[in-house]
Image (cartoon, rainbow, N blue to C red; front, side, top):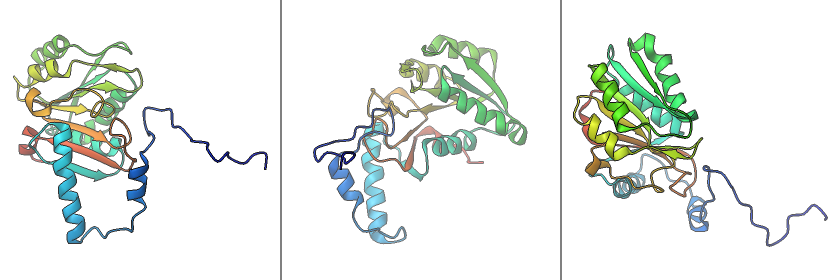
Length: 223
């Protein structure tokens, strides 16, 4: 057959995500399904959370969510925003704009004031810019920033930004998709309150789960 796939052909996924999954991971995924209410599943979930905490460089638990990165991030950015407060959403690309749009969609119901900070695509917001916005807008409950903007291949200085935000009462919520596993991320050491990731990007795993790690954010009442 002229159109048959050659025996030694290997398909490559040349995108930031999803990514090629190692054969050993695919073999594990071929194992029989485990019921999610069994002790066996609970043990696997607990072990995974512990190992993910090492990746996030945090002592706080890492929550796994069955869904996309957007699912995990929307749940995070909305549940941590205090109703009636101000939120700062920073964008320098497609995904930063997505988080801005989500806050816009919830603004009326949650009585949120969405303060948008936009930088040219291809550039990362500076700590100085974030500091200035926080000085001009007291009462901010959440600052949302993208560490590694997939759409432009740009990154911000997350360590410096975290140092600025930690001086206020605002929580720093970070889009770590394509950053975790690919760039240095020191969640506890830098003072990042919450970081969201998903499989199939820098984690070199199959898609299907969003991940959320949070330290100081755990004390915030979910809405």
